[in-house]
Length: 86
Image 1 (spheres, rainbow, N blue to C red):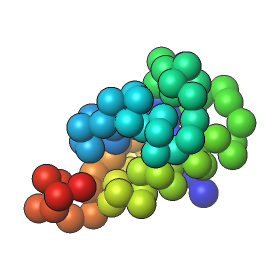
Image 2: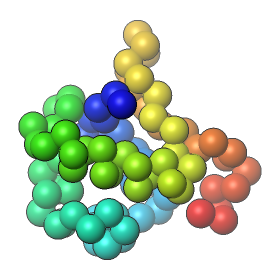
Image 3: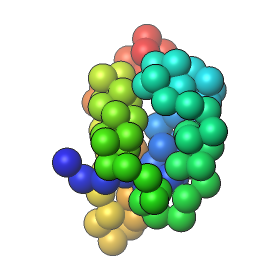
Image 4: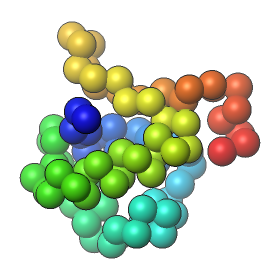
């Protein structure tokens, strides 16, 4: 499983219109930890298991993480037409 960046966490949260508190509740991770991850340049310096937990929480909501491919990492929804239903 590829690690995600702080920017991707912010993008995914924004895509779902989740607050930090929403993500904290859904992933069972503290808000301070999420803020620290989101402020990281690149992959956050945090346990891989926590990054995987965040990633899986987003993926369960239909988020797809796009790896670095020359244009920079990003996110998208599996089916953008369902964005308002998430």
